[in-house]
Image (cartoon, rainbow, N blue to C red):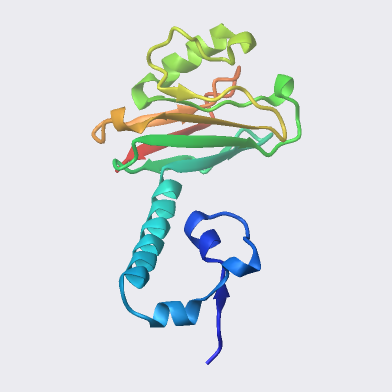
Amino acid sequence: MATLNVDLTAVLCGLGSVPKKAMIDMHTFLSGSGAWRQLFLGLALILSTSSVLAEECAATIEADDTLQFTPNKIEISRACKTFTVTLKHRGRLPKLAMGHNWVLAKLSDLDGVSRTGMLAGADQQYVDPADRRVIAHTHVVGGGDTASVTFDASTLDALERYGFVCTFAGHSPVMRGVVVVK
């Protein structure tokens, strides 16, 4: 039977490699019995579960020079305490010509948030800082740029309808999406 050498420290901690003397014979370790084996298997299960949950509490939205969000729908689990949205501008035009932001609000508030955002102007990232209807937003990005925002998802109501919009001047009629809390 083949022997599988595994860097146990890297597996448990998600870190880089460690010196060879820290390597163990994984086949011998797992074929044994006792508390160490159970501890290892339990930790492996916990770590794999937590990484899956972490991925569910984040989304990446792409925008481009054709005034589109991809995807235009985000699903947020009620289990998420916080949620992170990363906006990537895949276009080539600079932010002065074709900037995009990502603004979250109730679906019924998107038009009002868009109007006050346009009036706030570029200096305010096209988001009125006094507008309480805005739940979360990124700053404006140009071609090749990325921005992220993390917000308190536990305050979102599963019975409410939410949406997102780009409030850069003139973009809001077509650059929209929906957020579903499940």
